[in-house]
Length: 576
Ligand code: ARG
Image 1 (tube, rainbow, N blue to C red):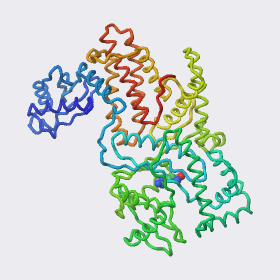
Image 2 (tube, rainbow, N blue to C red):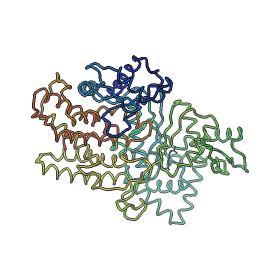
Image 3 (cartoon, rainbow, N blue to C red):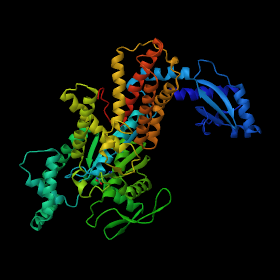
């Protein structure tokens, strides 16, 4: 149990000891009235009603009988109107938070509340034969953060990449692939050449027949075509691998959509059998479907007239497959906003057919817009919407910023060190910029903001972490027998309260599918640290006891910031 949970428990126990209030009426909330110096409040309306007395009077009675020892995490209880307010005991609180963090270190904030429950996260999921584009970039980063957050809660997370390999233009891609047969190369530049070739072919009528021929060879399952397709898949996978590695992204399962094609036929049969779909010629049509909220969904098709499955049918088949294999409690799809209806339809049909008991969630992602707020297809930004150049640009800019900072602070970094830090800062900036707002919001690329050493940027957070590390280096060894009880300065207490919030922050971020809950906490913590460092001297503290405790506070801050950044897959360099 973390410190805030223990605080709450101590209040609950004390309330039960009074025998004035039954357990089910103890509902502790954040104090509502502004200006109240308290940490938790008990509204007394229901309990007072039960006893037939006035809530304010009941609150007063409770406050009068509640007593706490000096060792308790609760300082006192006081009545205010119909509420009893409880305050943290700053002395025991400080000791408890520092103890939690120094004991659990990299584990601090984590819990096992998701034990024995599987969660599937479907993210990134680009299409083969193309470089990853904007929407995939967002999905990739938000998805990975959600994976990290659920893992931190002890869930068994299955990281799935659902590759699209059903492009109607696949024939052209195969023709282009054949064109490059004997050229060595992989990675994004090879994919780029392939894309370019595909575009040229599009404009070339003669190639049309060739593409047609490849498409039909593929449908007939001719080995040569299958082999070419495999090479294409392989190329796409390895090309993205380098980007994934840079972003700290990894998958447990990577299937292409075609993997689900056979199961999709079962879905069509069952949908017809249970009369969720009706045949219209050879096509299974789903009409008059209501979603979970009872809203009517537009009519949709489950197959083409040649019998082959559609995107939605393969997604329903994938849900069936995931249920059978993992029995997940949740399947989370991190996919662009434009597919909102697609998922509402796929989820409704899967539930109607009884394919899964899992919660099905679509985390809808907004777009990345160019520096001029243009849509990504807008002229100037079009060269920048691919992942690799985006990351490279970020790292080049980060390098210039780091060099400048090192020059000012006279830090003699080697060029290897500069490169390493620039990669961590540049990639971190791109990730954070994508995570710091609601996933559904569009993101405008703003290099200055992204790489600023102040304000809400990953660079600022990394810098604050590095400052903690620098203080700790100056410290040498921090005395282990510190006494946290001396940390009663308001700036120390404010920082401790931020540090204590991390466990609950992770829970909230998971429930809301919102990595920005973690980034908000990181920013609040970094700011609280800056205020603390401005108002309290650490190395030159007034007493040795204070020096030791503040040293511990700095170590705890560094650890907590590192843990939080880790949840977003952002590195925490020790110097910058
Ligand atoms: N490949 C799709 C696209 O690029 C996204 C797939 C998302 N995942 C899914 N299970 N449908 O739009």
